[in-house]
Image 1 (spheres, rainbow, N blue to C red):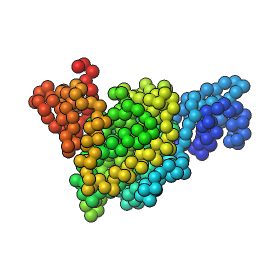
Image 2 (cartoon, one colour; image 1 turned 90 degrees about the horizontal axis):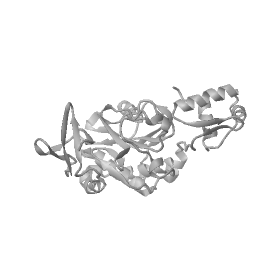
Image 3 (cartoon, rainbow, N blue to C red; image 1 turned 180 degrees about the vertical axis):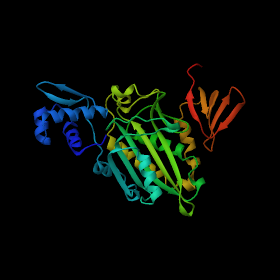
Image 4 (cartoon, rainbow, N blue to C red; image 1 turned 45 degrees about the vertical axis):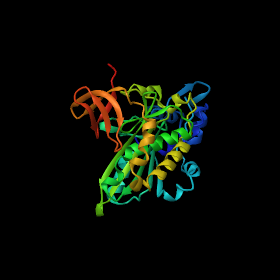
Length: 330
């Protein structure tokens, strides 16, 4: 669906989480009460839950903090601000990663371009999974950066995991863990993830789009669509999640500390801390690699970012890629 101007205005009126009468909403928007009801149904389709009570009106089940470019800019560090080329904020996109990959391929975006969306129609995780993003309920962030050669960004997804964990810690989020190669966990359930996409450019350069998704609030109506254990910041913080805009600024602050020096420092500057955040070492797991399911116990991660598993067949082995899942039958 296309997110209309009228629908955005309605959401802005309701964002405070208080009751607003149908009459007042209709007057403010210059539409009929029937039109207001139809728009409320559209908000529900976007994953926004609400109450409708005769004599009181409409009320969202929780306040919504909409993305605010000025609020994000205000929370950025002085060192980060000059490194950002542009911050795009979209009400609706197919995917923030796809948006930046398209701009990169056409040469119409500079390194340091940031893309944010309130709602994604085709949000993606690793290995082709769908990532569910109710409107205004998650953080959908992508950042474009460029590297001069392929080896310059080896192990980058692990280093980005460290940056995310640091940003969450700064916002007072407890119990965060990292899962190889690019998942953010909380007590074994998925809180977010990283999706890196790369394209070659002229003169041997590479455009890298770093996609970050974090669950802030997923309504119960959307929970049934998710095929793995998940958690959101609303649950983690007992109903008091950090400001989305402030957390986005914190993520950008950490990323722009990481990226300029990464070709020189590499994963070696981050692997020790990554291991401190690692929450699966010593646990039985299954690594799905193509059509193979390799069972074993997670030993850790090597200095160059490879997964080390003590496999049931073959002993200790290293893997550069794969879909790692904990074994539930151990």
